[in-house]
Length: 426
Length: 167
Image (cartoon, rainbow over all chains, first blue to last red; front, side, top):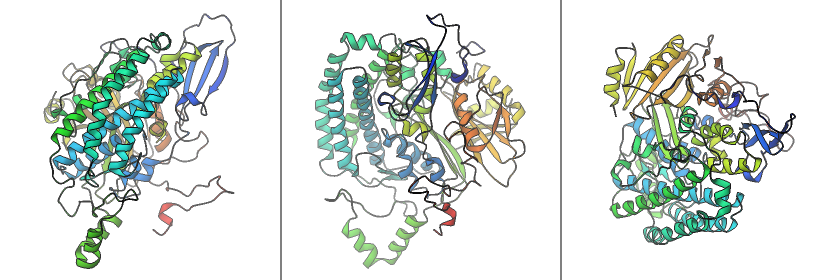
């Protein structure tokens, strides 16, 4: 990173080196936005010389839903339900970053049990997200059995998350000041059983892929970008760590208690699609290690802060319908205490005030640095919720990966970036 | 890793407006000083802020300056963070691009242009990025209403802006 000016020019405008191909004419084709291998609605404008990619321009925005604008019109607590829908494969990381950012603005600390559960669910979420990556990537590169295995194990995590939160995705389980409710009975046993079987399953994926000649052919030396270029383009997460830079927000700027857990950051030097595969496999193992430590740290205790002016009201219990109010609490506010009803009503309809200020809270999502820049003007609604989504920034390095390579490699390269368009377009 | 207060103290010699709040250091610079400041922050071997994490904006209509840009910097080697803030007035909502220093600013500046209408002089490809090319207005400005645009749904349902729904 010492040389200046930068070795890379910006992704969209890099001057092309004269390409010595067979033909002088090139063809421009659209790959996407409706294409099964673009992971959603990513559109690539490819300039092709035969089968060779001469240039590539990503076009994004097809899934833009204005979540940042919407958040400005809802109370602070309601914001959780919006941000969890951005990067839909890592909802807990969005919730955690948003909640920690607002908690820092409020100057509050959540109870220890809530901190541990947050970390545990985030790491389970990371495993689930990497499993989706593994499954879709192997489908695109022709290893269909791994696709089935990946989704099978991911489904088990979703079962755990459904049991805990009531929903498979978009949980809105973390709240400012803690969690919406405690773990249900039996959740810990389910997670323990999962931890027991998973290492063997990961070995199975490796057995199926790491010496598979087709897999190696499709991923080795494909999509190489140098670490300097990746840093210049802002790429983070497994892409950057596969190129030899050990930048992981969990160790670089610890949050939520990550500095107290014992885990390693897998790093590879090669910087190609295969190295990204190895890094993600390694991260799944490390995440399971963290979940194990979380389980051993779980002590009974509150999962919400005590302050009644901030504490999320209500007492939710998962009922047969998935989620519901506890009858005791409803009885308390409806029949016993008018003050409790007023407090409930005020917090739910109006919300609480957050002191003016601004914070930038990065967390390590499965795709890299997920940053929340939250600004308050002292009101009951966020003044600005800006999300630095890793998929959005990482996509800028895609043109560097595919230039001069075959169209088929483009598929491997998109997959290795692992963009989630819900996060890219927000 | 340098603590924010320590970093702020070191930066105090070079910048007139350095702030530390909630465990984060920030410097405020004038628009014309931005480029030189970022160059200094990267080149100084004790600071070495070589990674642009994020670039975003906030809109404060009615106050001067109206737009605040926030550049979130990080040092890969030293591990500290710093926010560089620049205020832009409504009349002069433009600033020099930093894509030459941080190529990652390419899409980030396009997004700020798209949502706030801030122009980045010298940007190689300043087009809208998330909104459609023919969109009018800049949606994240505070005077841009939420909702109130036509839809293509069932003959064009129209839902009034959120502040006119009587909620």
